[in-house]
Image 1 (cartoon, rainbow, N blue to C red):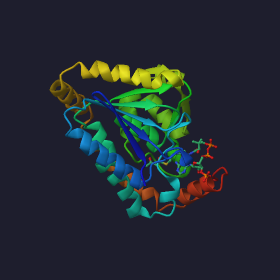
Image 2: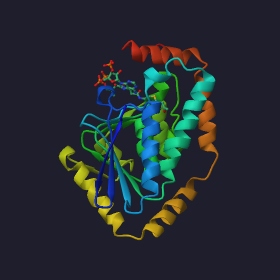
Image 3: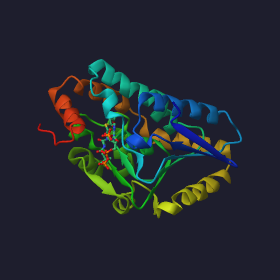
Length: 253
Ligand code: CAA
């Protein structure tokens, strides 16, 4: 199954996540494929910037695939988080070239976490962003508890995580969650303009700048998040939250 389309435009690789029937939700195969594509791009000197977007204009990524993990136990839940961090989210955050998220619709849960791992985030005006995992009896498990706090500050991040609030593009720009917003038909143009501005710079300097920026974020929080995420898979509240999503009803916690 092919979930990632790749287009190369001069020095820019555009990766489009394509699982539109499920609003581009991230299953483990998709994560593996995206991870493999990034490995190829890492060593390709001709490619200087990566743009990640979602197929269609409804969704960037609607989160991790809830149906895939609905029956996971604690160990499987923790491994889901660890593999996500190791194969994709940390790989993007520590990538040797700038990675731009072009958020073209829903970026929820693991979808927003994917954008948070990227170095630059821009969004279309129809985008909706949030970390609704607590409504599923979970917590963000792909770095959201750490990266959202770093990017927008603890006050706004706690509000978003603890209330499962979804923010629109205008509010996301106001709180610094994305750096700019565009009409949907201009989003990719905006991303390519940003990418070209990076391409003009020294690749070695960009790599070092990314490493140094990441040093602001040198802590054990990500490992702690993996364990906390896994532990929730052993609770009845997780079972209720996920059943409610699958049965298209509100959870009763
Ligand atoms: N996982 C699996 N399937 C998903 C999905 C997800 N995260 N998001 C959407 N889908 C599926 C729906 O189940 C539906 O499939 P069926 O047609 O088989 O029922 C299809 O995609 C279309 O979705 P909807 O019918 O729900 O579309 P909508 O327009 O009514 O609602 C939405 C859109 C508000 C984004 C809604 O789909 C939604 O709330 N999705 C879940 C968002 C979410 O909770 N994300 C967090 C996931 S947990 C996570 O990410 C954990 C982590 O940190 C590791």
